[in-house]
Image (cartoon, rainbow, N blue to C red; front, side, top):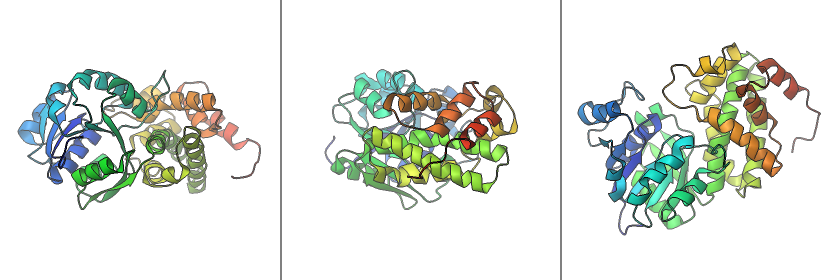
Length: 334
């Protein structure tokens, strides 16, 4: 890690969340360079200080600069990695030769990698082992964060000195990071809540009521906690912002990309129809099969996540999945 304050930041990913985090860092006084794959995004940020495809109607800080060359981010004091989770490995591999040893890379995407069933910290360790890993997760809608509305997140890093330096670099009066040293808990909270948000959307779309919605969030949180602990995370971590907090937000508003997909599925359209026209990625769609496989590998019971994965795969219809969940044997709650 570089000595002295962390002044320059590279943001990998010009989607809604990457752009919102670039906005946060600019407001915190950092020198921000954002990499985007789409030339129209880099041009709009550099010339008009906006990102119409992903954050329409939000004016961006004029100090934010954008580039289409990933190598330009190599000199940054720290990096926020915000590509979709299923593209994290390819993106980090392309960036690997540009990173100085000890550079903090903050993983801001949530998911379980398909095929390998690995978390994003595992992917980082395999692609850029010389980097210092951190995870940013918590209840935060990109549009609200970009507009400067208050939010709080978990910033997890094994090295608390590094965590505090990163926190000082990105904190603003409206964006409050809380520190943790449990990266696994922070990652699983973010990944599994996306799958559960699809389930909550289905409940909403089927008009099953607020009681069913509350029950699903609560039982889903039990699944999330069991999986985190089985992987070596801490129940206390997922009881905070990166788990319970993120779950409540993502499962409670159609602003959530994942909940909006579930909402469409609950009302009847196919998955292809539910995803049609969406530029932003609903991470839960890709993570659901990986979460199901990971839970099976670890022997962890996750019936709600399994039901979502089965619906997305076309193995069961929505009503059949609901009946199966409601007919499970009665048991002790904890």
